[in-house]
Length: 340
Image 1 (cartoon, rainbow, N blue to C red):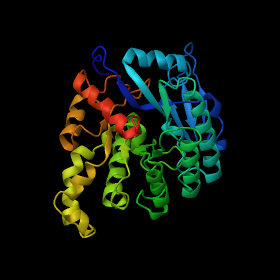
Image 2: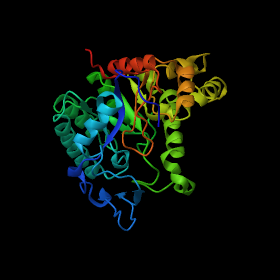
Image 3: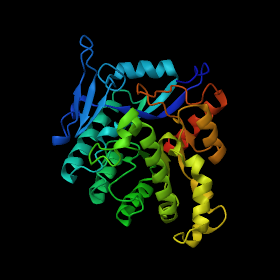
């Protein structure tokens, strides 16, 4: 996907997942397990997490697991720096807290070791056990201050609403550490029951389900008051926040007219102002969706993402626009505090 990037233009890529060989099997009954498939017989590669199996995405021998392949792909795509994030399938937001805590610590240790092999090209996002906010705060502090990871990377569904007061100490910790928080959906049914069997068809949980999750996460953070309680918290949502750019006007109308809305959100432009405080991943599928995102929220809080080697890889989030590529790069530097 995407046109060739203009020669000499580089970007920072914030949507780049990694699969670590050393954490396979580290989540007990949830796995994860990797089957490379068999080209001779036509058996596709499979990645199992709990009762969920992703079919047809190859991990071994690709940038997901091979550092040299990743660096070569980054060079070819003009990616100067890439921030590696956990595979969304293994975020384990609904797993037993003990399993989740142990997996997060191991994943963070191993990711930090990988980043250390190419520190001028890579950074890493931390995984934290949000089902236990106290442990999540402790692991975030360790990951940032001891391991050098740059920010937490969270599922959009944490088992309770994102505006639940139980998470407030975690948001406060992010503000205290001066790190952003990034969100990415998990396919339906990975570490809990599938909520809508219709999403099992057409791989819809990977695109339609993600859109729903991201849109709902944005609405909860805005309408649930998280951004008002933590006005300096920087939040970045994957895939442009799902359908948020199309729903922003309806969200604002709901906040102005529905009885549940608090006074601070009922004022004209209140929701719009809060949405413009968020950050957005430009990995949205194509130039029309990106144009809608820019039209809705401006270009100064959109950052580049590629999903390198993924099923929907797009190695040119700027779609051939050198000025936009430079803007995406500058935005990422601000979001990640790279120039401080």
